[in-house]
Amino acid sequence: MLTSATLDLRHEAGHNRPDLRFWLPTALVAAVGLAIRLVAVVGRSGRTPIDDAFYYHYAANLLVGGYGFIDPFTYYGLTGHPIHTQVQTAAWPPMFVWVLAMASLVGFKSYFAHRIWCCIIGAAAIVVCGMAGREIAGRRVGILTALVVAIYPNIWMSVEPAMSETLTPLVIGLVLWAAYRFWKQPSWQRAAILSLCIALGALARDELTTLFILLLVPLCLLARDSNWRRRFAMLGVAAAVGVVVIGPWVGYNMSRFSKPVFISDGLGSTLASADCAPTFSSGQFEGFWDFACQVHAKVPKHPEDESVTATARQDDALHFLRTHLNRLVPVTLAKVARGFGFFRPYQQVRLDIFFELRPARWAFVGLWSYYALFALSIPGLVVLIRRKITVLPLAAVTVAVVLTMMVAFGDTRYRTPFEIVLAILASVAVDGLVNTVVGRRRKRAIPAEPVPAVEPAHAAAQP
Image (cartoon, rainbow, N blue to C red; front, side, top):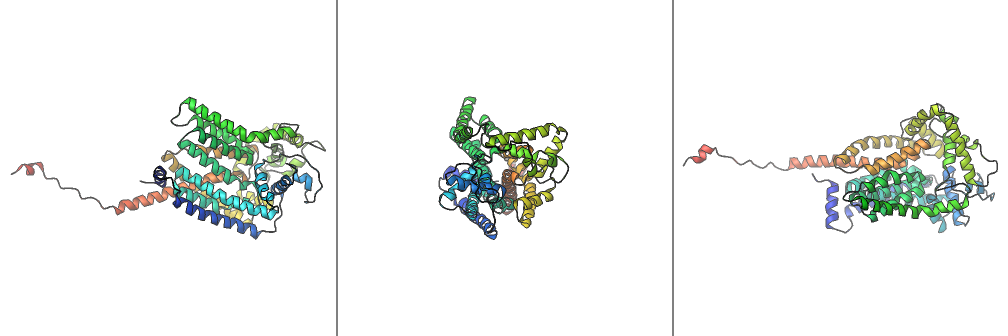
């Protein structure tokens, strides 16, 4: 039976022209996804940035204004009125600030303009995720993946307030696309591209650095049709690319902080707000976070160096962990289960509505859509295994999300990389169902060939 993946391979073998049967539907889906995001932004045009969105919006404008990477909370104050206190910051990875700064650089500095710019980025992510789906299992899977990413509420609800998760589908799509291209035809060039995609992802979400170990290393060491010398050579090239891409930012951080800072120093604040009495109890914040814990952490009174504060918060959180080891395992399980929607899911949706101002109706639609994708992903996984298509890249992204939640806390936004995996697997399941139905119809449509009559041997022998 011919699958869409088989047809795509035939197409690539015989033609180099663009596959319009993929690009035209994907472009239409991306246009629909862009429209959804624009309507969401315009429908809430009076929004003001809060929390993470406040940081990214004002940090981008400060960067374009020539201030470098300084903390907008201490510069503007929580009210948005400048108090002109400049404190160097690496509280979040730099990529999303750079991306918003592109809009600010050409004059689009308002929060509304940044949100519109995020809609465009979100539309690009739809196309890239479609490319990843096509690379994994064929044209139809690519189009279906793009459709899921376009309309899935948990993705576009992070785009609307200009959160950093705007970039997550884009970078995860790039990583999966590059990973499967390398798996099909290993080469040092493709290893370099994969490393580049992971490095860009790490500069957007520093926890994605784990993909160097979870994904890049095993793919290189298990590369097909390659001897060990070639495998290590590809791994060496990939490592060099990662250092070249991430190294300058790390060097910049090392030059401006007294404590070692690599991609970001946000781990201290994360641990302080995630590992404390309210989150380790069986109360409403179990497995979640509490900003009050970060505020009350033992830190220097007037810190001039953010890395000192981050280290103090981290030490405070680690001390709390050492004195509450009896709750470590159940709370860690609660973190992961909460993040994956299987521990107090309704409460988590309400927390999303409260802290992120998500539209209530769509937040609950997102929850049930997530469960539907999760259910469809199981047969999709079976289909990939039966087709002998590696699931290592999808598993690596999933493990990275699990590790993030174990260290930090459970949050709907943190599972966004996993939801891209679900979108692909659900699309594979639907593609497999379509192939099965079409195959059965074709069998019924083909008339059975008449069986030629065979004369008995004794009859043929008579004159």
